[in-house]
Length: 156
Image (cartoon, rainbow, N blue to C red):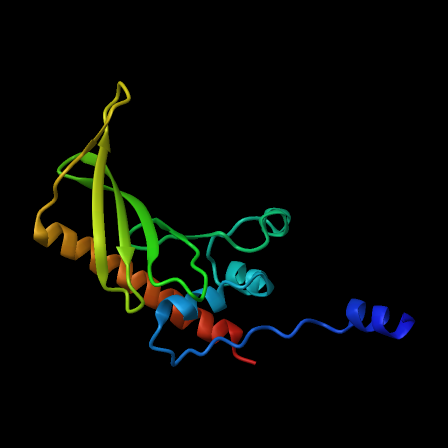
């Protein structure tokens, strides 16, 4: 019994080895965002909750990225078939909150755009196809940049 307890306490957990050649980018992202990779994610310059918060909720539940567009991802499970990305941006002088639902290849499933008035009400807004395409490309670029950077950070 003592040997088992000592082994559990002192033998490090094996990190899940993300398969960086996977076509399912949601599964890959979920594997990268395993709580055991928290320090590597922070070293790479990305925002995740504190270790205390990670332990409290049982894992990394959000990822924040700065780039051409500051955005946040709700961390998926490996079995999810979509990922939610939220951001804020300025379109035609107005602050617009953006929500993208992406599939396992970062393809767009659904997009929503909202503007919150100064007195509080939130209204859905429409954006042009070219604006949506530009925002989507920025998000896809940042997601791919994150995966590439983490591949370098997590190499044995």
